[in-house]
Image 1 (tube, rainbow, N blue to C red):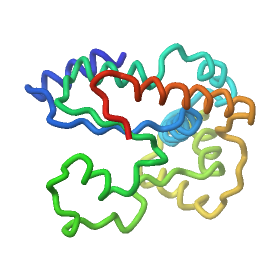
Image 2 (image 1 turned 180 degrees about the vertical axis):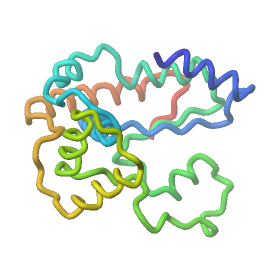
Image 3 (image 1 turned 45 degrees about the vertical axis):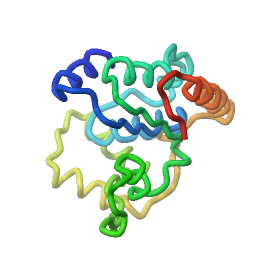
Image 4 (image 1 turned 180 degrees about the horizontal axis):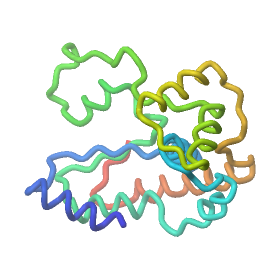
Length: 185
């Protein structure tokens, strides 16, 4: 489903981007994070039922990066490993090297805070009962459970599953670094 979205983006841009900077996140972290974010606002299938699909994925970062390159046709395509991304200022400096970092400040607070397991459990119970929450009610659930950091296994891979995905990620990073037209790191 990526190609049609990129084709729409390319048409909207009207010209190839001067520089595309893309950060790749390890698959195990990405799947957990994406699932948790989706579960905040929607009823979801239990994570354990999705794990076989995650492990059987037939495409990965190399295919996605190649589509970015081939469809958007950026003049420069830089790809970074999530662990090497640095702070927001350093990412922006990579993208726009002439921009003075002196005028830039890091955000003072986290802007993408995830719900705790306890909050996700309550949200899923309520969504499963057919409730539709207002943003105010939703925020109240997150706030009520914000201090409860107990891991309840809402979204977690086993050690073996994590290792499979981490091995795949390491291999795929090598494949991305070998792609023509990609600056890695």
